[in-house]
Length: 481
Image: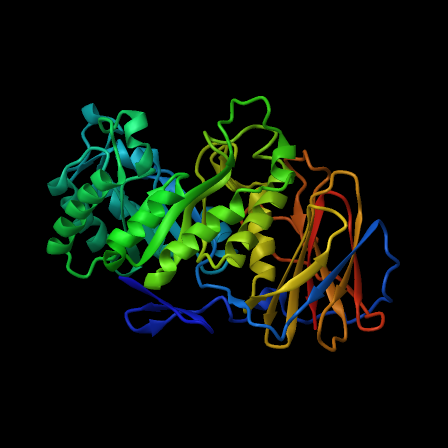
């Protein structure tokens, strides 16, 4: 089993007593090298926004395995998807560094576990040991830990124990933990349980699953409550079950359902007033018990996403900002729901896997989220000009996000350290509505799933500061050395 150690100064991921690489290690594909030609500081273009970095102040360590994907349990019955021979999919994920997989979704509360091979007459309504073993080989080829959701919707403790034993045996050390149920606060509204369905009812059933699985697997780990939107259930669960879980988890979608005509890509560009309150509740719920939290299912628009919104470049700017917001509020990671729908960061098209706009946001986060997130002051002048800074050693990584549709922004970075130059790695596309043509650091993902970032333009400081021009509807990662 994976165990998670969270300290004030650093985060380590431990497997069987061995320390794995953390998010603080060097990411060699972005290290200094090559042409060292330095350009003079450019003149500002657009609205001037000052970003003051405070590298000397206490920061938030970037956790290991921060990025991740969430998949429907029903997808495991597809013998062509998450299999070790799908090297393109594996390579696309490995481009993001250390991450985490989550198996759950609505189908995890609908699909029936069967310890026997699937027969033709059962179709894909059952999950078998063969499905689990095939997925385990994929996870082992990838090397990412897995959170696995047990079916609480169709309540059956003996069946849950049988499934848990199979998953534990098959995944081995890659099993990060179990979840009991999916979006559990909605069981009453969905007809999964009779009304009233309240936290006390969920806690009782969750506890029965926990006790039954623990009797069979004494060292098994758990997370919960895996709610969809109601933070009060997180607070209640943390108070009731904190001794039985390794971390808290929940979901987040910016808006939905997808059928609403009012939802456009402007929805993703606008400020999200509810997010900071939502994340603060999760952090505060676990804090008395030293319990971290993770967003184990998230994306732009719920109900499979919306064409022209979830699959365009605007979604990449939203996703990049969202990941940093979760990090800023001390979350341990995010799992973008994937595998189907318009919002999937990696999509299967004509039997091959392709990177969608949100995937490029994950690449940019991987390039810029190093060491620890440190405080910044942003004299915005614009309400949706966003800036985040990380410090690793003596190198600053500043991520700049311009969600404005027509306004270019000239970010004036005051780095707070004596720097020789800044390298700019743009995240861009032909337009905010573009579904293709996205690139990061001057490069795009190739047909084999490979990604080799180019070297960005390198600029000299001007009186110790750096001007970085970020066109409307784009972003950039700035490496300051």
